[in-house]
Length: 335
Image 1: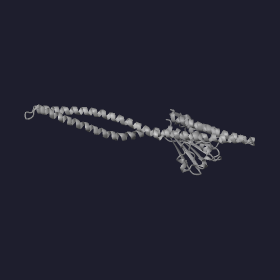
Image 2: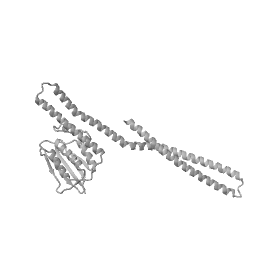
Image 3: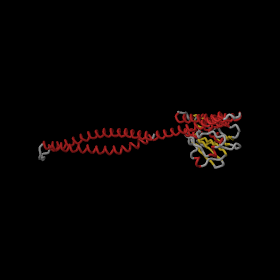
């Protein structure tokens, strides 16, 4: 793939250089024409003055010969001056064209590489639950001594993998939609209401403590997308915290922004993982990914980050090892 972009760079360089050459040749032709006319006019004026000068010792033929000789020399000097100037411009322009071509194609190349990596990672992640289901079902078919309870365990495990696949597919579709679709982001969103909806939906053990704003302030954005952000962050906090601990959700506001904070207890996120926690398909260390309820494939936080970025906001992580982890989202206030 690198060769393709290198070839495209050279082709684009060639087109840039061709345009530059045609432009300089056109301007040079105009300059040459104007310069020769100017030289010819001045020599003609000088010839007329000399013809009318009584002290000029030579005849008209000598004046014409001298004028022709001087005009030819001047035209030759102008021609080679323009030629050398154009050659210098073409050489410098060649390097400049190559640099400009690489700069022009760089975003496309980076996007293509990111897309290829994303496709490769997605393919790998889709294969994982399928391989688990396949192996478990094959063993169940081979083992003739399995009991009813064992079959139930296999079915339950397969259903769990199906849930993972469904969740992964849903996140992949969201990521694709957020990358390419034009989405309205200037709506009036009651962030407190969205948090309450998410809590009612996923907090079956009543572990989330929510502190809304005293006064109702609205965030500027897309309601469905911001609900997804709340869903990802609260679900993430519930999954990666002890089952008997609380998850604290607060909403606050500044003069121009609304802040959503989700804080949970647990193992925390070390400094190395913190720098990659929003990367697609990134998996933190085993202390986090081995949680019994872990169903993530490293896309949820990437989706949340993408949504916040589209809204022109910020999402920050603060974590203390073996203590707490806090995600803070800052969004523009609706005014």
